Structures are given as C-alpha cells and as structure tokens.
Amino acid sequence: MPIDATQPYDEHNIFAKIIRGEIPNHTVYEDEWALAFHDINPQAPVHVLVIPKGAYVSWDDFSVRASEAEIAGFVRAVGKVARNLDLVVPGYRLLANVGQHGHQEVPHLHVHLFGGRPLGPMLAR
Ligand code: 5GP
Figure: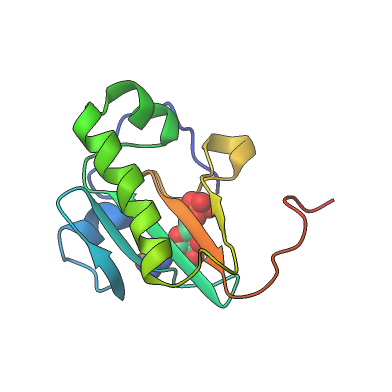
C-alpha cells in the first residue's frame, strides 16, 4: 500500500531496520551520509536503492528538513554509486517515489537506481 508522505517518520520502517543492521542487505556502497543496497525485488538487471542515513520520510521531507551537508552527501553518494557500478556510459535511471500517487511503499526516502539494459519510456502508458 502506498504511504502518506506527510506522516511522521516511523523508526520501525524496513529501511530504518536495515540502517541499524537489524535486517540483512546486500550493500554496494556506504559512507557517512548514505547506504546503497540491492532491491529485494529487482525490476532491472541493476536495481539499487540509495537511502540517506538520516530519518526522512520522503524527498519532500528531506528537501525541507535535511542539512546542506546531508543533502550534498546524499546527492554525491547517488552519483558515486552509479559511477562505481559503471553505469554512466550506458546510462541509468533515478526514481524517487513520493506518497500515494508516486506509489511510495517504504516510508524512508530512497532513490531507485536502475540500469543494465535500455529502460524504455519513463512511465507505463
Ligand atoms: P517504493 O515503492 O517505496 O519506491 O519502493 C520500495 C522498494 O523497496 C521496492 O522496490 C521493494 O522491492 C524494496 N524493498 C522492500 N522491502 C525490502 C527489503 O527488506 N530489502 C530490500 N533490499 N528491498 C526492499
């Protein structure tokens, strides 16, 4: 079920548990600001989720409350993950779902990074 992106942060959401190490993940990158790991249900040959370490529900929440350092750290981490995975030349797609219409299911900000094949049009028609 898609979430309401205006709800308060839920410390028990699945990505909060992953950050705390309570649930295993296949990490591809980690630094002070961000964690990147393989999506459990990949939609492309490469499907990685990049999440900020801070407690933010969505892109909206992050863009309002995060510090400049957190925002810079997270954005740089997304770029670094794509470079580390050699996705820059073939290309890749970033996607952040927000709230009901965005069909966001996990209430911790995450950017999907897709690659490894031509990805087709941006939205299903
Ligand atoms: P959303 O629809 O919120 O943008 O995407 C949530 C994503 O999280 C989905 O692609 C889903 O497969 C992924 N996901 C949900 N639970 C887990 C989990 O426990 N581990 C991992 N690695 N991915 C998860």
